[in-house]
Image (cartoon, rainbow, N blue to C red; front, side, top):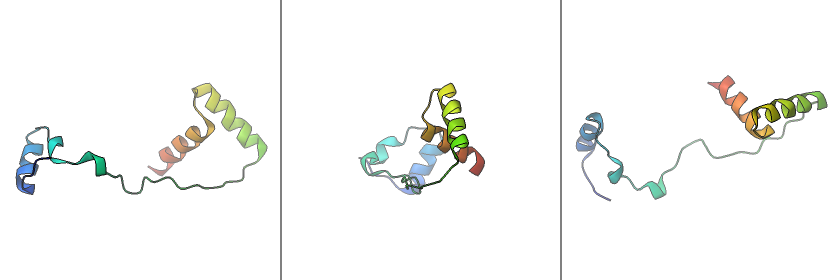
Length: 74
């Protein structure tokens, strides 16, 4: 991994150059993206509706819930 100053890195990035060689991607993290388990009680009719929509989209119930929550929270 190469080393340069922050000013040089900013200039290369601003000029559209590939700066990936200056990062150690093996230690990269995405803050606040660690999964946390949440239990939610839902009535049967809601679970059935979620399952129907998930099947229509070809995704899991969990993926559907995550997608909808993310859309609402943005």
